[in-house]
Length: 253
Image (cartoon, rainbow, N blue to C red; front, side):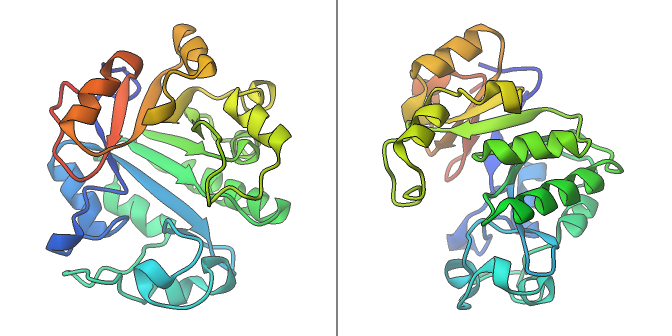
């Protein structure tokens, strides 16, 4: 269950452990992942002043204790506020600072987060594509949003691009989608536009016909988010690598 594109298990938002003061998407979590010999998955949001930052949520309350959305504040606000419960008082990083930190020491699986509108989509894709042109290290880019995959290719990113997917039975985070959009996303019918190179699939959706079909055609599949060795073993027949958190996976998993 390994693939040449993803030879090592991928630490979801870095190798984080809140109980030990190591917070998701923090410099400490990324260093821990590198020390463990794992690849790194991370999230990129866009601030009000157009700066890509390493941060998962749309709003700031859970991770920073601040009201409001990332998209409504300047990067300086995000990057000067310590992550809650961080033992090292890590603050979220600008994408540029994150790339300096990693410096090619681990494979990156970079998730571009869905933006509010087409302008934000284009700006995030262009910014990340431009910054990756001068980065020396293995990188992949992925997104739930097919438009971001298409845009970053148009802006010159030539590395592997992946679509993140699941069963698209309505979840509390995707109420903005209509039934036609769900059908298109569930069956990966955006291939003509996205031309994705790999698939990152929720572990409960690995046996969807579209996932089986594209993997049979040679597209690598990573499974998220695996939280135990038992889940890793269950996913093994259907995937090429795992995206994990909360345990230390066997390297052969």
